[in-house]
Length: 353
Length: 172
Image (tube, rainbow over all chains, first blue to last red; front, side, top):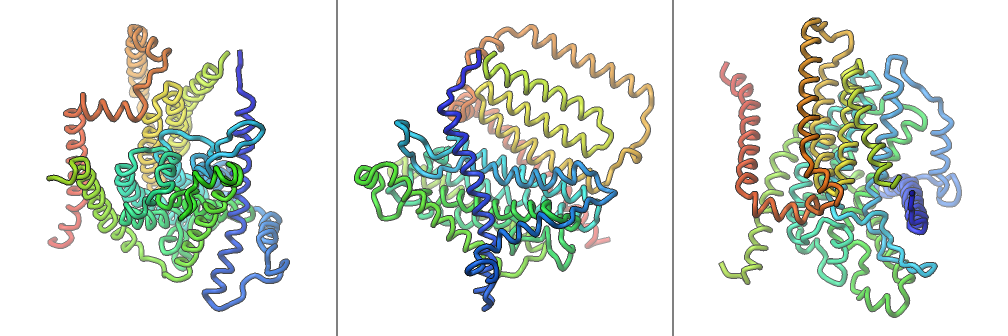
């Protein structure tokens, strides 16, 4: 006997569709934002032809990518060549499942949580998905049957594996402070209290650097260093398959900003406002909308940080990248973890040795 | 059939099919990819048994790290089906017989153990991260710490082996 609670099924389906399409649209417009930010930083005007202020530029770009000729190298494995960008896109999207996009809304007589899956291993889930993200690049780079692509893929995978370690250790300290692995509870602990950034400033710095490296963004975009590797792992790609790789990078950026905001900057918490009182005064639904807007504002400022850094800091050399990851970030993260653990022990002992 | 039962059969067929794919595929790259599918379906089984921590750690460690290294090495060495050395016929026979012996042992061991079935059917909470951490750091704290020191020594050993070449280059 197949029993399905249809209300929950539909509720989750709507939520999944809106999160996926929302992150696609935001990724689309972050390409526009990137070009505008680059233009401002370089004293140019940026895209200005398609629509007012060039607002239709992402659509024009997408149309161009769709209509370009699709080339599959004759010596490469066709299945893996197509699988590469698909995997990159899939793993980029999957992180959105555990991020709490808001507290809850009250619709049709039901309380609907604005989080797709509140699993009690949310942070570990993010790690699992991030470690999967490397497959899209590796498979695509290998299937291209091109030395430059292969080198780009190797660089990307070794970089992601190296920085995952520092990222994990920096998060252990945060987990010791918050005492939970569920993102919802983490955000809940920050509501109307000090945000985690004040408790873990060093941890946040390490996490931020690692997030840049995991997203393959400049200064760590050695996987596609065009002056050394032509185009890196996507040299052989054209048309929308190339578009998928580029798109996956922007979705990764958006969702890693969302993760950072949820972990360190209070998630959907509205700063300087008591959220519980607010929800009582203006109703749960309006409070949820305000909280969502606040979360969105925080995410956009992180996106701006990503772009600001990209157009300001030059690319690292490969040995510098590895030295930074293994010899600076990991010892710093270990130090942070030990100090945090010691302080927590002291606090449990009422500040007596 | 209930949802869990459907999921169980789906995951089981996926796991066995992918495992056969690992053995049968010609190119080592495809073998590794099939192996990743196997790990995912096994993680699905863990989730069905309410062992979420085990499931996600299986994905992070095996599918996320070890398999990436496998792919890394295979891609760098550029192993192809035609580059594979031809194996001895007797070696193949020995492999088949050894594998079958292992399977008989495993099946016999599973058939003997009736306790596992009971605890699985109940859906215990042992696999949840809170309970797991508590038992790891109280009941099993000594084996846990000893194994962590083992891991540390393995790591140091790897670093030492990796360093040897550098010294040779300095003093030839």
